[in-house]
Length: 157
Length: 307
Image 1 (cartoon, rainbow over the protein chains, first blue to last red):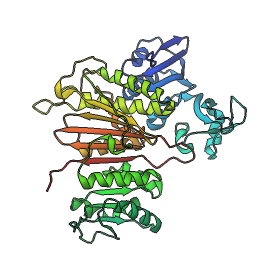
Image 2 (cartoon, chains in turn yellow, purple; image 1 turned 60 degrees about the vertical axis):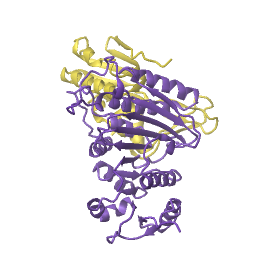
Image 3 (cartoon, rainbow over the protein chains, first blue to last red; image 1 turned 90 degrees about the horizontal axis):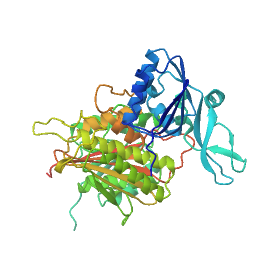
Image 4 (cartoon, each protein chain N blue to C red; image 1 turned 45 degrees about the vertical axis):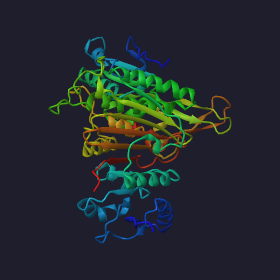
């Protein structure tokens, strides 16, 4: 069955979100309850889906944390989160991005999947109008970035 | 002798594009007139390049001539038309989808037969259908769609796009479409996570089908309350990266914009006071790489009384 977990796991200074972010997630309640202070790292690797109500909850969550002076860093942002950050800048909400996932394809062996990229490393490459380089995890041949170069990395600007 | 059909006017500066579009449009059996301007003529419809649209827009609007704008122009021109909410029909697909979309859209306008996803998928494509009977059926419908697309081997990226289209269109149909006898939208401000039963006209219908070219997701309500100018304004929102998220209402005000952003073509069929149907089309042939298309195609078709 589809993953409905929308799990929110709060370790010290680290929040892990999984599954769907939608109207049932209520992330902004977490920002209000005072458990988060100082610095927060949010792991978004396993966010599989976000709808408009999930976007609103996420934007509200980031705004509340910002008002309370919490410095947020986003780690391993999934494709679905990257797409929303590209369409709605509020979805980045002043947070820093440490790393994110991007789709790649291997023309040699047919592998198709996502690879994690370091934001600081790829930003100058993208600024030069070049796709980031990566190796296929299956056959080690060069893997090709398989989305639109001018659209996928807008959130890094 | 067949009676002479009203012509289609074709206004485009690129000779090669003109020739291929002229050939495609002749399949409608309407005469196709290649011209530089309207000259007071009375075409059935006009097909105009995005670059030439500004030259004829005022005359088209004042005379009520429906126009299909073809966005094979520089990407900035097409994107600006969407951001300004300036057009009701924008064909932005690359070839060969451009020709498919051009002829389908022209035939819909000429025949005034607007509704149904069958116009966009191959003949005989199986179509699945689900009628929602409660507000939370929306989530069940999204789950069922995902499972079915997984069975078909549709890539996860496209599954997510399809789920988003389905989710947002159903949310609009369930919460925004219904009005009471005073015209009030009585479900608009109800929380989206409440499970409320839906009765009679309140029950929207989801249909979807996929051939080798398109995955089509269709949502139909039985109210017809969406205004064309509102539809265009929501679509325009998706192009502006300043899209504001509404915080003070039950909905986020982003649903149609997000559905458009997830589609290669968004089709809105309106029968005012009767029904609104929105079809999100995902082109299964597209492998994204290089430079992105300027924008997705969209169409707002409105039923008008026969003359």
